[in-house]
Length: 159
Ligand SMILES: [Zn+2]
Image (cartoon, rainbow, N blue to C red; front, top):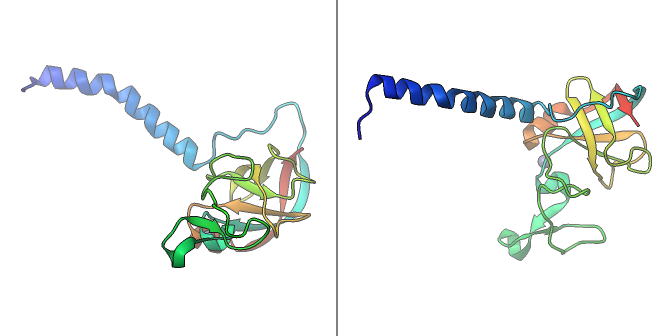
């Protein structure tokens, strides 16, 4: 099938808004633009110890059963040996940039946090070692999580 120049132009023209929309979606997804602080509430400034984590077995306490060949299972804790859904947070959402693990006794699920150098995040996860004034920030790779390291910084919290 052949298209003349005009036909091609009109086809490209009509798909351009779609392409732009997809690009914007990606940009927003990568920058956690889907998280917005609540407008009617003031943020509290809190000093917190922040660390990074990813979906890997080291960060999330899982390993593969059957000598590393089987399905992911919890490697320790009360669920040891039970199947683990990798990349799914304690609140049931899919972990992505902006996912924050916190001590939900102090910062309940849904709490929006602004972390300088990371951006907006939302409490959607928990972690065994994440207690008190500690939060864990999700990164797409273990390397990036390590790069973040451990930073005690002032963050904004919308409780
Ligand atoms: Zn990791």
